[in-house]
Length: 277
Image 1 (tube, one colour):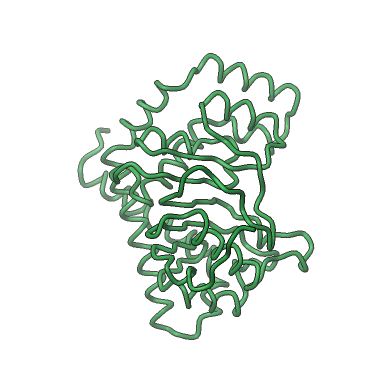
Image 2 (spheres, rainbow, N blue to C red):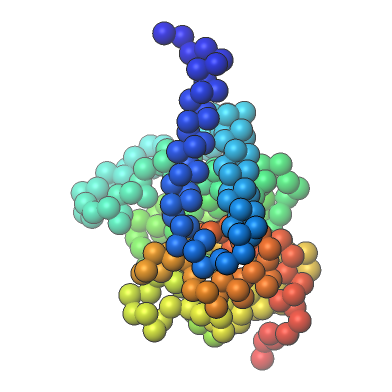
């Protein structure tokens, strides 16, 4: 049966409602920390708005972008890497990153969410870049990207090389300054930030660790109008932060959206200078 316009929009609305359900389910415990009902509704509204925005962009340009990105990848070499790691490391921690179609879709959504498909060329640093799919998509949209990761995964190393990603080996650690780079950045990103998913509760980052990192980023890596976008893991209790950390984030950002930390204006973090020796 041909897909009519009415049926199409019905399917789209269903998909948006499903994504909203799972999105709100993921932050249900976070919303319980907020006493202000208006703020709760504001967060829910913006989550819905972002889902709708990304869904509209996906409809208008996803297939074109995906196909053009795939044309830039050496698919023969990629299949060789796939076969290699499926044989020597047949576990999800490795093989899930070899699902190129799934990870291209996921990271295109991230780029659309940040309007990278239509912005002027930016200098971007992506922490915990992993296989480099997000960086590759940023390059496709004309941006200059630096990846930073620990470099301990052979499959990531080969995919980074395949995709031609410029990467610096390093890690974000509590109360340690980030390495210096040759350029300042317009945008710093990190997806599934692990600082609040430690196996040891004593290692979970609290206000002091976060404040040090954000001030370091704002003062030493970002341009004056630079932005920060982090996507959080949940803590062991299912929350993404406790009440004290939530209030800290809200003091610096009135657009906290559950798992998303999006600081569009970082001048507040410049109040305390974090310099290099």
